[in-house]
Image (cartoon, rainbow, N blue to C red):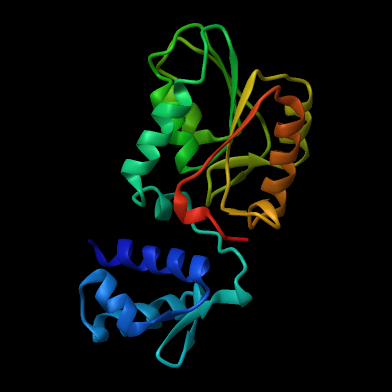
Amino acid sequence: MLAEERRRAIVDIVAREGRVLVRELADRFNTSHVTIRNDLKILHTEGLIQRAHGGGLPAGGGTLIDPSLKEKENLHQDEKRRIGEAAAAEVKEGQSVLLDSGTTTTAVARALRHHRNLTIITNAVNIAAELAPTPMELILTGGILRERSFSLVGPLAEETLRQLQADILFLGVDGFDVTYGLTTPNLLEAKVNRVMVEVARRVVMVCDSSKFGRR
C-alpha cells in the first residue's frame, strides 16, 4: 500500500470510528509506530484529522472532509468497480440516467459504456468526457465548475435539471448516517443533489462501506 493510500484509509477510519490509536493502526497496516505517527502528523498539518495523545481524532469534531476527485480515485477501486457493474445492471434500454459527480458514479458511467439507447444526464465534467466517445445521448448541465470534484453546481445547474426528468438517478455521497441520512461537505453540491432527487423517478445511492457512519 502506498503512503498516500494508507493516509486516506486512516482518514476514513478516523471518520468512521471517531478515534484511532497509533499501535492499532500500526497493527492494521503492518507498519511501524514511527510511520503511523508521521502519517498522523501529515494528516493533521493538512487539516484532515486532529492529533491526540497516542493517536488521532476527526477534524472539526467529526465533520466531513472534502477530498478532491483525484485524491479519491485510487481508493477502494475494486469495490467501486463492482458497485458500478451492479448499478449498471439496474438500467434498461431506452432509459434516461442521471449521474451525480464522484468516483463511484464514474464507475457506474464506465459500466454503462456498452449499454444501448440511453440518455445520460450529468453535472460531472469527467463523466461527460468518459461517455463522449459513445453513441449515447449526453446532456451536461451548465453551472460553476468545482475543481475538486469536476462537478457543475450553482443556479444554472439546478435550473437545467429542473427542466429534465430521469428514470433513475445514481447518487454518490460523502457520508451515510442512520440519523443524519446522506451527507456531503459542500453546500452547492448538496443543493444540486436535492434537485436531482426531485427530478428522478428512482433514486439509487452508490457508495462503498467507508462512507457508512460518516456525517
